Length: 307
Ligand code: GLN
Image (cartoon, rainbow, N blue to C red; front, side, top):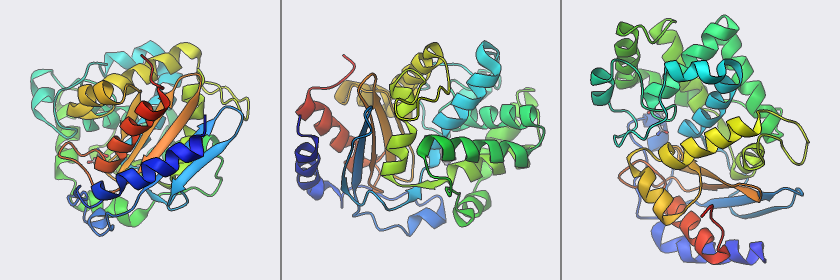
C-alpha cells in the first residue's frame, strides 16, 4: 500500500475542515494556538514512518497522556486498580461532575478527567511523592517516544491550574468519598503537568507503537506491559477514548483511539501500526475536528480497522 500517497491525499482533502473547529479556550494558554494546522504520522513495525503536514511541530498532548499514566498504573496495580476506577463509557463530557456524585466517587473510566486524576493519585502513592511520580511518567514517555529531551510546558500547566476549579472540584469530590489518597492540589497539579507534555505526531505515533503490538515495541523489542494489559488498554481506548463521542468514533473510524483538547488524536491498528494526528480546531465534544475526519478517511482509504 502506498501510505505516503494516502497521507498526501488526506492532507489535500482535509484543508476545508481546518478552519471549522474551535480551539480549546478554557485553558487560556491553548486559546492562542492558530487552528489552521495539521499533521499526521503513521509508524510501522519495521520502523518505517510516513508523515504529512507539520509532523515535527510540538503541541500539548493533554488527555492523550492519560493512556501513558493508565499504562503505568495498570502495570503496578493490575486488577486492584479497578477498585478505584471503572471501564465503562461515561456518556458524559470529559470534565463532568454529575455521574461522580451518584456513583460515589468512582470514575467511570481512566480516560475522563476524574479517572485520570485517580490514576495520577495512585502513581503518587506508589512512588512516594508527586515529584518522583512525575519523573517516572516523564521518563516513561521519553523512553517510548524515543525522545530523551521530551518535557512539559509549565506555562500551559500553570494556565490550567489558574482555571482548574472544575478539576479541583473533581478531586475534592473523590476525596470526600475516600477515593483520593494524596493532597488534591498536588495531585491535580501533577495531572496538569503530564497533560502539558509537548510532543509532535512523529513522537506520539512512535510512543503508541507498543500498544499496537501487544505491549512490546517491535523496533526496540522492549516489553512495557503484558499482551493482556495491552488488550485492555486498547479496549478502553475504543470504548472511552473520545468521551461522549466514543461511540461515534468507533462507528466512523473503527480503531482504538485517544484524543486530547490540544487537538491530538492517537490510534492503533493492532498488529499493524500506530497513528498520530493533530489539528487544534475541536468539535463540540472537545476532539480534533479535522483529526477525526482524517482518521476516518485513512480507515476508509486503507480498508484497515479492527472490524
Ligand atoms: N487537561 C485537560 C483538562 O483537564 C485535559 C482534557 C482533555 O484533553 N480532554 O481539562
